[in-house]
Length: 281
Image (spheres, rainbow, N blue to C red):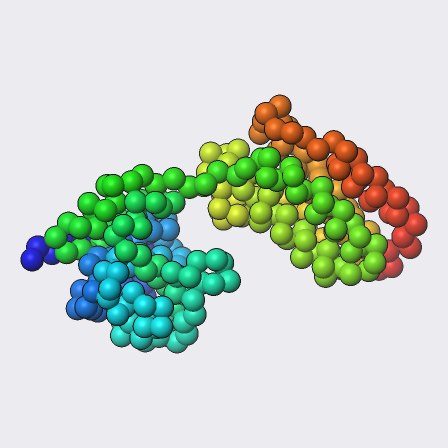
């Protein structure tokens, strides 16, 4: 059986010592595990941007019938690879194949995504193959191409003004934590991805926004509010202005702009802003 192993000299130069040591241990254990046919690294490892704050994002290619392919067996597998402190599945992000782990000390975050070779054809990035049996992992990757989903401007337009109305209503009622949470949601689901796409960067939430799109990052700061009704309104207006600019620059002529909902949501915000009591410092 032919085994291919990526030389450590080809690992990212910025890989911290703790990450490097743990990755060696993970590779050693994975190569001995029954039913594991390959291991690949994505994320910062694949982009070569590893630093002390990076996670290790790993793709574990498994045989469909293997014990390690079973969700209830994955924690035991992760525990066999190093000093595991905590682990839980990625159900909160809608990815049941994901096992999120913390090893240490020193603490190192590792994400394992367990996939069959057939599932590798559809993926959002091209990982670096660290180890494999018989070239099967590379062959599976070659059967498809990586495609990261781009933001859907129509999807955002259909929802944005309803979310603005919701935030305004929460501010009006005094549920400011709800309003702050909604503003954070707008940043991560709409404003961040659109800003990153505009800068030709991967539109992954708010990841590396400060580096990829500094001017938009400056605008984004204005959408962060204090726990104060007037400041929440100020931040919401900043979010509206930023969205309008991103929408208009990003192809508003090619979508159905919901002018009625936009006008109603903004008018609703205007209607009660003037009656709010002055902010008390």
